[in-house]
Length: 151
Image (cartoon, rainbow, N blue to C red; front, top):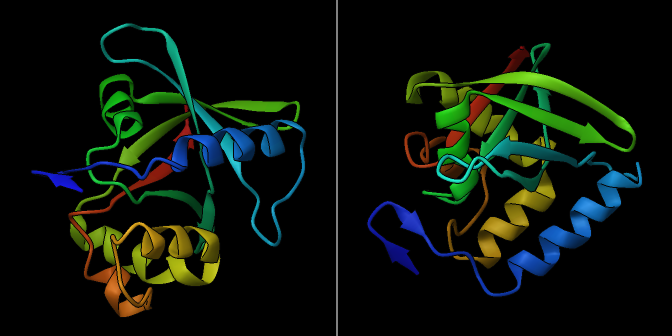
């Protein structure tokens, strides 16, 4: 499943992501979570690439966790810096700031309470075993955390 720092997503994730993007574009919530569509230009092609994400708020700031090490959207964000975040008909242009591991730890610790569906997906994919706050916090440096800021 892994290739260095890159984790190959399971075969079913692409179809699940399409469903989640449709749910978000329709402005529907997925349970208690509020998914959104993050769009960023491809780092090589420049073509807009979209992926579903579930932003979370911790201490008044918005964050997103990338649970697949080496995910293309993470590399695209690193190259572009700015993204479009869309929920329903509302879009906003934002800048994503990658947190160093020390700053990412408390956000990862909060992740299971804020995004339980994401934790279940990570467990199902074999990225984590328990999904506890301690286990997620220990993934700092492997799971990327971005803070949303105004563009």
